Image (cartoon, one colour):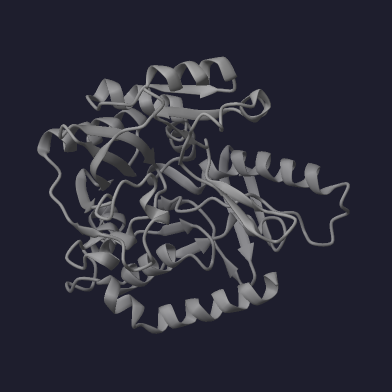
Length: 364
C-alpha cells in the first residue's frame, strides 16, 4: 500500500472550508497540518534552512510545528502577514513588507519536485489577474463582455454610451471598509447610471473594471479539480433582475440547484485551468437570454462547500478530500463518503465554533 501522503493546508485557523476538509481527510486516516500565514510573524515562527545544497522549511505556531516538504499543499486562503502587536507603529509597514518578501521566498520549499500544489503561488498570482482571465477565457471559447479597465472618465463614458447606458462596475479585489459612523461599505458589482459618471474625480481617483451589463437567464458556479467539474445552477433572476445574487437573497434561501454543465462549456473550463496550470478553480458564469455561456471570472481559491450545503447530492467535500488524498495512490482507510451534513454534526465543527467565538471576542 502507498504511504500516507503528507498534506499541508494554508488557511485561517477558523476557516470552515479548511476545517471540513481536514475532518474529511481524517476519516481517510490522514492527519493534516494547518498553517495560518496571517499569524506570521505576529504569533508564529518560520525559517528557511539551507544545508549542503538542500533547502528546508521549519514552522512553529503555538505548540504545533509544520515542517516541509509536503506531498500536497492546498493554498486555501493566504492571509497577509501581520506584525507582532508590540511592534512600534513606525516599524509595522517595513516588518510586514519584509515578512511578505520572506514568505515569497519560503513557500516554494514547502513542497518537493512531485508535490501537488492546489495551487502553486506563482500560478495563482497570474490566474488572479483579471485582464489575463478575460483573455484566456476568450481564447478557450468563452464569450466575454466588452470591458474597460482603468481610470479614464472619457473611456468609461464611451463604454457607457456604446452599451446603451447599461454597464457595471467591479473591483479588482473584493473588500470593504468601516465608515466614520461605524457602517460598513462593501466593494461589489454594481450597475452604473449617468449620475455615477458625472464626476471625473470619482472615476479618475481609482482604477476599476467596467463591463457591459449582461441580461441573465440564470448563473452557474462550476468547481474544477482533478479534471472533474461539479456545477450548480443559481436562479438569480427568480424574483426579478439582479446584479449580484450574493446580496439579493436571505442567507439559506439562495436559489441553488443541481446542474449539469454542457460538455462543450466544461471543456472550456478545463482549458482555462490548463492555461493557468491550476489544479483547482471555481468559475462564475452567466447564461444569457440567448443561451450563451458568458465568462465572468475564475477564482483559484474560491469557496465551494456552499454548493453542497444547498444541494447535498453535490458531494464536493468528499470528492475534494479524496482528490487531495489521492496523491501517491493513497486509497484511505474509510470507504464511506464524507458528507458536509455529517461534518456539521461532528465534534470538529463544535470545536471550530468555539475558536470562532473566541476570535470574535478578541476582535471586539
